[in-house]
Each structure stands twice: as structure tokens, then as C-alpha cells.
Amino acid sequence: MTGAEPPRPRLRPGLAVTPLRHGLHLRGRDTSVTLEGSRALPALWELLRERLGGEDEDRPGVQGYVEAAPGVPRLDPADPRVDAALDALTAQLRAHDLLTEYPAGGPEPAAWLGACAPRPGPAAAALAAARPVVAAADPEGPLATALISALDRAGTLPRPCRDTGLAADRVVAVAGTPPVAVAVARTAEGGFVTAPAEPERARTDAESIAVRMDRDTGSAPADGTTGTTDRMTGASAAAVTALLAGAAAQRLLCAAAGLPDPAGPEEEDPRLLPGRPAVLVALARPPHASYRPWVTGPAAPSCPSPAPAGDLSETLRRIGALTDRYLGVLDAPRPDDLPQLPAALATCASVAGPLVAGAPRTDLARLTAACRAAELHLAEGIRGPVSVGAGAGHALGRALRRAALATAGSSGTGHALGEEEWREHPQARHWWTVLTRHLELPMRMTVHRLASEQAYLAVVRDPSGGTGPAGAAARAVEATPADAAALAALGAVTRAMAADHGPAGAVHAAFSGAEAPLAVAGAEPASWTDEGWTDRWLTGIARREPELCAALARLTGPPPEPWRPDGAEPTGSAAESAGPVLAGLYACGFTVLAGQGGPR
Image (cartoon, rainbow, N blue to C red; front, side, top):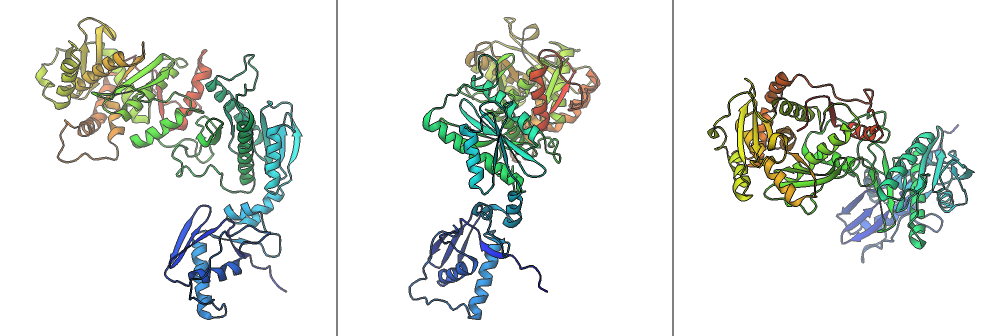
């Protein structure tokens, strides 16, 4: 009685080899390795290639024949030293995933499975049982036909199915047990392929994505029906159709065979988010295709919501997902042609009109703009003031400052402090000088203590009585008189810059100390710096933030609990647009607090 035959080791299809002076360079689909140290390596490689199955007319495999170096005789496979060298070379190939195993005694799997599947045999068996079904309103349309052809070339037997419930520019393909599906659609500018999901989920996702992309391009039909006004013609339309069909077939078959999704791990593409679907978006002009994060898509069961961002870099990465050009829920804050000195500005669209945020640096201006734009959007569907932050601490700091400003108005509860309390601080002196001398604005600064707490309100007033509550050009609440004065002066500077250089009627968003912990997380300022350096100053504000929040909570009361998907939903006419923003913020680890304080 004999057991099952062991699997046959084979070189992965598509493996390419380049000879070196004393070695070889091998390149596979996802990895490469350089082997050096002997002029005999090319000859050794040819022996290994014959043993493991190189390229022939029927099976595309290793690309490139390597001749032995002049003067090196052909090696004898029976020589024990050659056999040991072959074993060592085989071990290197296996360690670098350039070797795979095929089932013994059966047909070899398709070359594409051999190139990418960890175990091509089981993957091929899963695909043989997959039996893809391609549903379309017109199974003979160009997109359905291209998808059926791509699935057929991959080694499966697709079956077309007429589904009049689908839009004319949309196809849904289902395969495997349990069934998995992808939806592929053409849009006015290109098209998209959804992430693999349950069949009904794929259809729902496709509808949501189509609406989103049609709204962005302004290509929705005038009568309100589902579909697009196609702007692609000729070769560009054919190229996009072929690309979408190939990508859909690849995603579907990889899911059915238990292979990784072609979108790849989030570590390889910083735009993607853990546990959230990636949508392939293709454009015809210019030709381009990339995987984009879909923050409002269904979460993976293992990752319902990521942890809050730990630093500014991660926060900006998630803001990039929230503001993705094609699938995001907010407009992306960007510097555009706004000046970045003496302070930095960033602008984006908001429900209240153009928004311009100012900060000491451009990255902080982008953060401030994104949070404020989200707050304005949610305020239309949620009762009470709304505060949005990259995490619980960030949102709390923004909410408590807003509440304190609403309570204090344009003056504190006590006498104004003297200028000596803040004027000598390097940041306060700098921004006050920029405001009054560089910009030549005749402003006035007053600083008050809030009750008996270690919290101070600074107000910059315009003598002409314009802007803000009671003629205030800017206000700030911080833990020291100097911090409050510096941020109020900075706010007045960025407001003036926005008025001079920003869009007409733009909403202004000021930087606050609540952003400081994110700005300095994971970084330590140089020991020789003082608070005249922005990093050192922000580090001090971040260190004082917990005590300030405790003091402001005593003055204004505790903030509400953060919003969660099972909590109160938005109401009113704006609920339809606020819902996706809430879902997107939650998916990106942001915190939303509602019902605390008043407008700033």
C-alpha cells in the first residue's frame, strides 16, 4: 500500500533571471533575491531549472536562459557537491517565495495561480467549483462580455444571467460557496470595482458608490434615474472596459480561491484603512486606476473601528481617506495658492461656504480645516453644538474651549490682566507684532482669568467693531495668559490673511491649543530650544492640556458621551448627508461630541 504522492516543487511562473558577473538576480511577482559568490551559479541554475520545471511551449514559466560563463564546464548532477549546492539554492528560492508546490499526478494549475497563490493546487480546486455567474441588464453588453471573457481566460466557466434590476452600466459577478460577489460599473469619467462581499452587499455598495461618483462629476441623469452620461468614446472606453473587467475578475477569483485581495495590505498603500473596503477607481483621461479607501463602506468584523490616531501624521492620513476625491465624505483641505507666511492657511469647501483655516504650520491648518468642516456639516443634522476631533482628547479640548468661550462671551469674570502677564512671552510677542506691525492692524488685546481656575481668556478686538461676537477679531482660552494671548493674536492674523487672500465670504477657523498634543506626539523638541520655537511652545501647551480641560469642565460642566453607530441618529432634512459623515468619522477613529457649548 502506498500513500499519496508528495507535491511537486516548481518554480513560480513569471520568474525572471538576470546573470551577474559572479551570480544571478532572480525576480518574482512580489519579491527578488540576488545570489553571488561563484562563476558556476549560472550552470547550477540551469540544472535547477531542468529539475524544477522551466519554461516550455505549453507552460509559461521562467523567463531568460542563462549560459554558463566561458571556461566553466557543465556540472554533473550526480556529483554529491552539485546535489548539495542544488539543495542550498532550492532552499533560498523557497525562503524568498520563488518556489511553489503543485499537486502530484494532476493537471497543473493556471499560471496566474502558480505566480501568486501560496498553495496553487487547493486554489485551483476552489476555482473549479466556483462556477461564476455574471448578471447584467444586457449580458451581451461590452462590460458583461469583457468580464465573461476575463473569467474564461482565468480558467473558470462563467455563466451569463440577465437581470433587469441592474443599471445598464453595471455588472455583478458571483462565485464560490458561500457566495462572494463583486460589482463593476462604468461611470462618466471611467468606472469602479467594488471590494468582494456578499451578493446583496455588493449591489448596495455599487449603488452607493455610483451615486457618490456621479454627484462629484455632475454626470447624474437629469431625470434622476440611475445611470451615467458617458463622456468616454472610442479607444478610451474600450481600454477602461477591459481594465475594469480584468480587475473585477481578479478580485472575484481571488476571493473565491481564498487568496489575498489585489488591493493589498494597508501597509503597502498608506491611503487605505485597516478593515475598510478598497474600491478600484479607473479614469479614462488621463488613463489611471488606483485603489481608494471607502470610509462609509462596511467594516470588517475583526476591525469595526480603528483606534484613535496617535500622532499628526496618522491623523492626516485618515483625513486623506475622509476627503478622498472620489469616495470621501468631505472636501480635502489644501493650501492652494493661499500664502503660508506669516502664518499658514488651508481651504476647503463646507456646507457654510468656503472655509479657510489658519495655524502656525500648513499641516496644522489642514487639521483645523478638516475638523471644522466636519463640525459645520454635522451641525445641520445634530441638535446642539458639535465638536470633532481625531480622538477623544482632541474632541474634548475643542468642545470645552468652545463652551468656555460661549459662557465668557467677549470678557472674563474678573479684571483684565496687565500686558506684562503675556507680552514678554516669545510667541505672544511674535504674533502680536505680526498683527500690529507687519499687518498694520490697530488691534487691542485684553486677557482675563476665568473665575478662580487656571484658565485664561484672551480677546483681540477690532476698534472698528467688525467681525466676531461683540467686535472680537479673535478669542482664545488656554492654561496661561501668554498661551491665550499668543493664540488669540495668531487667530486674528489668520483671519486677516483669510479676508485678504481667501475666497470672498469664507468662514474662518482658528487654531487652538487642543491640536497641540497631536502636533507634538512622538517628537521631542531639541534641548536647546525655548518657547520661541513652535515645537517647544506646542509641547508646553500639550503638557498643560489635561489640567486645562479639568478646569474648563468645572466651569462649563461635563461634555456629552461620544457618538457611536448605535446612538442617536441625525434628524431633519440634513440627516441624509450628515449620516455618511458621521459614519466616515467613526470609521477613521475620529470622535464626535454634540451638545456642549456654543459657537466660536
